[in-house]
Structures are given as structure tokens and as C-alpha cells.
Length: 159
Image 1 (cartoon, rainbow, N blue to C red):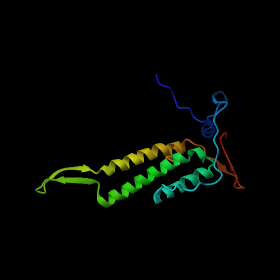
Image 2 (tube, helix red, strand yellow):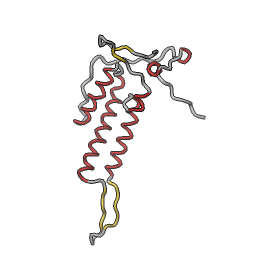
Image 3 (cartoon, rainbow, N blue to C red):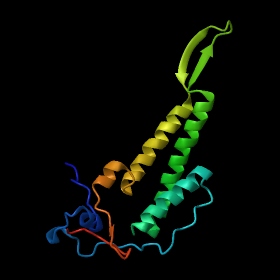
Image 4 (cartoon, rainbow, N blue to C red):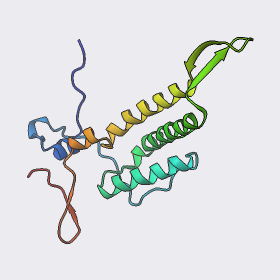
């Protein structure tokens, strides 16, 4: 028999509006929010750096950017940059390899290996993106903080 549903952190339950006192873990682990938007890691490509700042800025503004999450955000940005770079390469050089015999007759055609790399990168990025609420479906399940008239953010968890 399986383990059942994955546990949902209390903060997400609060955002979903489904928190119940009888289902809240008393000593739930709390991690530190970052105080400033972190610099992009050097190992990211130009595309990855742009994605880094897009994601970290959004999460920071929503007060959802935690120090311990930076490695996963790095992985997401790397996967997205690999996906985009692979797609650009495929558009330039084609998606199909044609194999011909010595007479020049076509023997077979197959997708280039880069097609699988691109597809795998997108699948990996989507898995990571859902963890941070970066997909439309994931966002639909989260009640985000709202801004008041004086531009301070409050959460509408219990409204």
C-alpha cells in the first residue's frame, strides 16, 4: 500500500484557504526568506540569467523566495535555458537526420538527438516550475498576497 498524499506545507494551506487547526503540524520546519534578490549564479547562460531574475523577482515580491530554494531555482533556470537553446539550434539546423546510402538514396530518417534533450529539459523545467507556482495550473491553486492602498502587501488567506 502507498504512503498516501504528499504533505502540504502550512503556508500553502493558508494560501489555498484550506488550513485547519487539526491538520497543522505544530513544529513545522520554517526556512529563511531572502532579504534581497540574489545575483544569478555564474554557471547560467545568458538565457538562464534572464530567467533567474524573472523568477526570483516574482517570488521575492510575493515573499516566497527562500534561501534554501535557490538551488532548485537554479536547476529550473538551467533546464529552461537548455530547452530554449536546443529549440533555437533545432530551428536553425533542422529536427530530422536523413541517412543515405553510398548512392545517395534515402535509407531512413530520424529525429535528431537534440529533440529528446529539448523535450527532457522542458519536462524537467515543468516539474520544477510547479513546485514554485510558476505554471498557470499551479498559480490557480494559490491565493497570492494582495496590495493595499498604501502599497504594503497583506495576505487574503482567510477571506
